[in-house]
Figure (cartoon, rainbow, N blue to C red):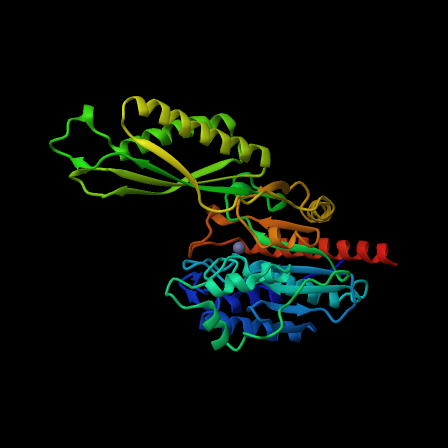
Length: 417
Ligand SMILES: [Zn+2]
């Protein structure tokens, strides 16, 4: 049985937290000076652990095992949101490092290869999921050319200034890396609510985004009788109520939809809004349900326009914002290794669940079987300074991941020989 060292794990996690610490949280935006310092530290820590470590041409820290394959790749991200927690991404990367060390210290697993990655810019400071997309061979130079952060700094310039531009980029090595494991905090409250310690991820949900533009007529808010108004704002609110009813008919317990932004034109107390925009996002683990929601939304828009054309009131136009993102299934065989490890170490204390958040694993799954596991987030909070997980869960999660990693690799080695 592979044994992780809880003190070493927690010590490294807390050291990483000190880069960009802001109260209990962390601000470590991709490629900021403090992020680059954290990457240098991480690469040095990987080297001490016996990995061949480097920061690649986009900023990903990659620690390659000196053992020959088959290799298990363990990764996540160490960049944060502008109001980041200390564990989002960071925990999975430190698990990878600790598991590489733990396997190397055990006679039965010393020969196994664990590669460890901290993918650059998962959080999208410049271009979301950049490191994992580069790793699987996407044409990321296009994304890099156009990318800027909120301050308007160009990614190309930042990579150059950091001395990273032109360095080789970590790439998927077919025939070597046979599986990807991404441990992560749940970032939701489900595990905590039912008192479980480990989530075995089945699917990373897909996502649709749309903008709906309502067009009416601006007018004086004092002199225009209600009966003849063409109020785009009121129409938008009525539409949302209808949409909520319609989506409830299609949803299961995991389906979510959000109107995250509403703009009224001109946005004045004394003007009946002449135009109103709403930004809608919905997510689900099931492609067929996402398509049904797409279709229902289009029907609602059509019905709305038919009804309102008669009264010459307000029209609505539906625009999709981005390419749809389809749900990505995690590999069932790998998930079984995690489930077995969880059952052995915490009997009855785990469950299978979808991931409502996006992760690098959905990109890496394009080139090799991928899996994810969760530990509980206290209060279900993430992307906030107060994000936290009980130390007992952090340690248990790493032991489960290490046990699963060893069994995945032993099985892969047996298959190969
Ligand atoms: Zn994350």
